[in-house]
Image (cartoon, rainbow, N blue to C red; front, side):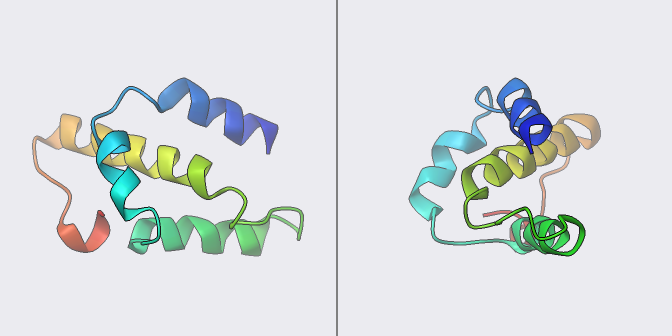
Amino acid sequence: MDKLSGLASKLGGKGSHSSSNSGSAGQEDYVDKALGGAEKKFGGGKVDPAKMRSTNEKITDTGREQFEKATGKHVPEKFSN
């Protein structure tokens, strides 16, 4: 998980979504839930998604920003908090 944390620190922290998500810290959108589910399934019992919540938020926010930058379209509200 150190690699995942390192990736999140490299990618996150620069986006506009990181400041707007602080108010919705208790809400998980579909992408956040999918990442947590993948960690449970493929993490071999070594990953606790609840502990990785802030790192996961940075990763999914960066993914959303890259999608919006590449396509010029906003991510639907259903998939973005």
